[in-house]
Length: 181
Length: 157
Image: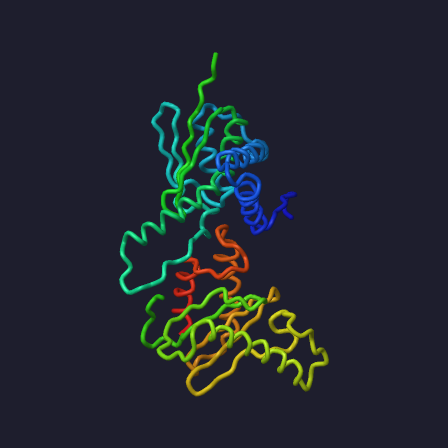
């Protein structure tokens, strides 16, 4: 391995993710989706804390919040999800929106196709797509935690939420929290 | 199912798991069916099971008769991989996990072993097994699987 870099098969990460959501959302807390989501997000938070340490080992400190967010969008995303964030929007008042048009952990999610009966009406197709997007939302808890953990360790306390726009695209909303003096 | 070009050679495809459950049935062009779908699938599974054990037992060269019903690596052991009639060709592949892929095509189609391996590795595993919304052992109709399969099959003429 070059330079001591160790790699893990991506299939392992994929399967682990699937099991994480299945265990928390179906087995442990089937009636409390929010609790399951918070638990998964907490796991992601711890992982994000550590990942931020590793990926910024050789870098100087970030000058401001925007630099940290840009690091997440470019280097952190490239390390974890093999691509950069496609679009970053901000209102310059502490709210950032990260758009990924092809989020790696959502690329394989699909629901059963509707039985083809001649002409498929548009509303049925749209309803099917909405079902898929909703089911996919559970798989975004962990990435939200990752982002929150990484940013917190870089000195940017925040709250992160996500939603699926149309598979496999999704958006992450980062709200930078003001420190209470 | 997606409409393929009229010159397409694909007819239909079955995917079974090792318990005989038909996980997926994909049809492109099948104007004539004699049995109900359930009977059709049961017959297909039974035929393959018998054919595999027959080919292993009648092998004049190999010493290893294998365990009846146990899957082996594609290419190892002795298993048939296709048969041809004057109206269609049936190609078969079994994965080590017992997933059986059957592709029914026009009789002029060439060897489809590589194609079946590709379908298993890059379409079934990627879009079905790794689909978080799918539970193993159940029949599936995943849209991504269907669309990727249709696209790939177009390149097989």
